[in-house]
Image (tube, rainbow, N blue to C red; front, side, top):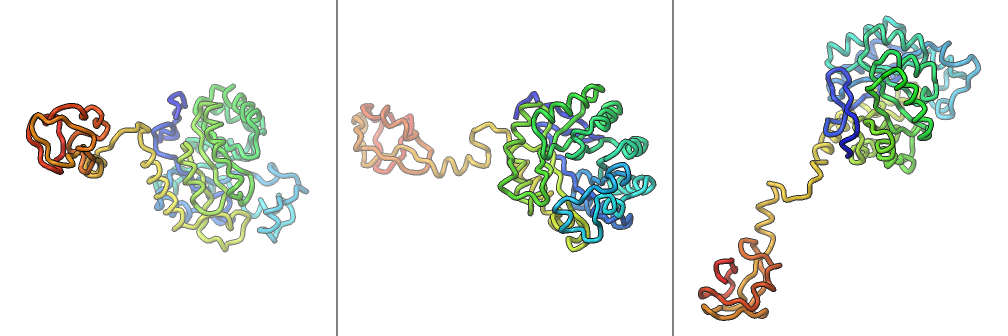
Length: 352
């Protein structure tokens, strides 16, 4: 990974090359407007080892016009609403609810994050003193919201589902116009769920090289393995929807992972990030014993008398690698033995 990629800070956590992957448990609206359920989700996410839990902050009447239709996937999962506004209203949390959730996060030692979808909700989060805001993919082109985030100078974690590189560049220009320096991007596929063949994980590298910012992956694909694979592609942040129960009503429950899966997800990510290593190709300490026992040395096929000249048919190669390496065969042929060498003896430098 390029050393030029910026490292940012969210509260006391560094996010960047060589740092642990920043894992966000996406609660979204999976609390169904139930504050007690939302608080329970915080405890579960913290217990599973996530760095942060993220909610959605909005006022329904400021986010959607009265007749805004449901998305196709929402029509399949939300039977009680016919418009976005009525659906959103059923999941909406009040400002005091967010204050309570933030306190629960502090007590549970997990970062409180939220995606603001309107200017009033952004200001509410800023008044709470949030350490960062998450910009959801649909808001990437909401210039007034981006301008307000830029003025706040609060770190911005920006999703880019359904976006082009020029659109991302334009959004960054707005955010950076206010001297906002701590920005991270998320590659994302705005489909719920997102089929594996559309994950396009190589876009993580494309975005990293284009913008020299930390790039993560906000995953909507089924299961855990695509998001875990994103770590191998260089993702420095991960976001994954989770729920306490996939059978609960709501638009995102079915595509979310449950608590046991969230625990497995965090464990797998931590294992993979360790496995990435330094990138230097050289023998590692744990390989040295196998290297010596499994590689070969030059060995005498028959007994060789002192002063006798080595010929190719007098030599072979066998384990272990405690003598001259096989690539020295040509240099040994034509030389003379310094001592008597018994058959099947490993040839060492002091014998020739």
